[in-house]
Amino acid sequence: MIIGSNILFFENLPSTNTHTSFLLKNSTVTEGTIVFTNYQLAGRGQMGNQWESEDGKNLLISIVLFPSMINPADQFTISMTISLGICDFLKRYISLSKIKWPNDIYVNNDKIAGLLIESSLMGNSIESTIAGIGLNINQEKFLSEAPNPVSLKMIKGRNFDLTTCLHQLASDLDTRYKQLKKRNTDQIKKEYISQLFRLNEWHEYRDVNGTFTGRIRSVSDYGRLQIEIRSGKMCEYSFKEVDFIL
Ligand code: BTN
Image 1 (tube, helix red, strand yellow):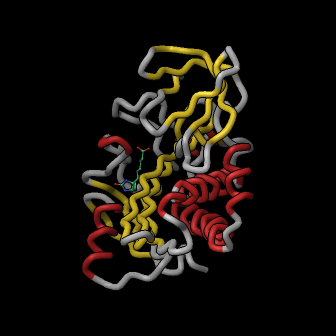
Image 2 (cartoon, helix red, strand yellow):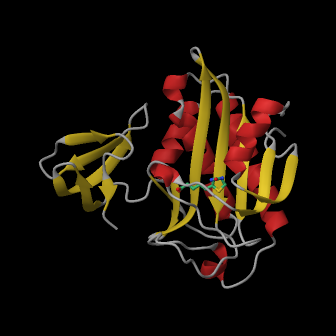
């Protein structure tokens, strides 16, 4: 086992990603170490947003990875791998979860988990990666502006044991990470694309030119989203260049 071989628990932290980065700079941390907390005072989301999570209700973790087998240009494969691991965990309880490109995890039209993946590069290789995961488990009320949060409890109507969930998630992520270590990236990419939220369905999107109708067809090797528009033309977007209209 790599992921979950070492679990460091903290009652609270500013942010598990920030603390993991501190540990990496100031101590020796083994690959697969999970930093886990009950509460974040300054939990960080994508695009400088905050990540809301009630004390002791959800999984707030950061995983230390040393993915030296991945070229920095291909680092989106790490994102795909972690997203698939979270979906594998959710499959234990829910029949369908989807990946909203690039790496939000959705159940129906609601967001159950988010990822904040931060890598540091040295020359032409990835020195370390911190994979931060916020997975909503037992929270029932969300107070922030986030449009569509959901938790396992809201879906299943019962409480889940956080420690059990943590070990199951670690095991599912570990299986996926071993797939990545074996450079099984074609399979990872194939599965990631097949689990994309709104794949092959016509929906509304917004880019710099305004709102348009399109359907997601695939993701490029560099992680860019490929959306076909009505004329048949294929458009490619990097993160933040296109919004899903939900
Ligand atoms: C998103 O905006 O969707 C990403 C959310 C990521 C939140 C997790 S919670 C654990 C880890 N520590 C952080 O500060 N953020 C990530």
